[in-house]
Image (cartoon, rainbow, N blue to C red):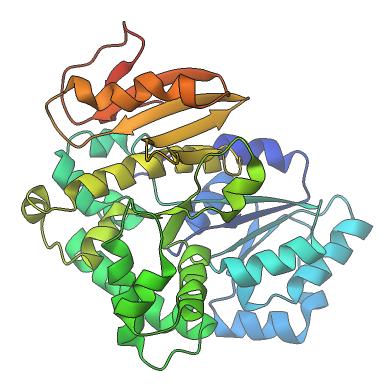
Length: 384
């Protein structure tokens, strides 16, 4: 299929004018290499997956980096993290030199970039595709198929199918990323942990509860969770508090970076099964939350996406803060609209001091209305 344009392209083109180095990280197979090759065809490309290239880079980094004066694109840079220090020296002494870096291991990659390339590299996170990016394909799918297929480029482009793709993805992830980052003897226990996380989509994360079910202590659960987060399997949505210090200590909600991957971990084997599964509403909520997250990341913006919950257990599913104002969304998988969907949205301005710019119910039905105080929107027409 033809190349699918990514929302991040505009951000990267602007950043390329100001940074000598661009670093794109994100989950495995989210399209990082494809994006950078498409945008910068003039760059000389090397992938450190190739053992011979990696050995050359490790044994003689100066010669490796000095092969060309053209922009140099190094894929899987985390496999040779020492190169980052040499790149720092080159761009400091030769401001005209340009580098593109990509990698899927946030731990290793970001440590090197933050220590050696601070102020020299624009750093961006490329997630699986969004509904907006794939609307030409995704809008033709019914909702259950859309969620079941997920948004990894290989599935969206038709190069693979979800029922084959996600089992292979998880196997690869467990054998490569998890073994590299954690000394785990029982990989089935870690897989059980991932499945239990999937069963908690949209819930407040509770380490002690999970530790009892998995059979490891809370510190181990916290360590495993950080690996899922750093390798872009899960996304932790923080609560919204106007006192920023409270946001840092209160428990987040747990979501998966892709709904198709979540379906696989929940043992959902078809769109038809998803339609009647008790987790369908959670997976739909996951999809909408990640649409907001992807939009922010594509614009190079960090954070700004929250949920609201107060001491009286009043909740709003999603708050997006931009330029000091809040967009608040309630998310429902129902195809039939009910006035009760908007109850908390109506009260929200009285609960927070931050100006609320927009309130909307996002759902799966056809009836839409933007004439009142609270918009009613079909998920296909959501703009964040």
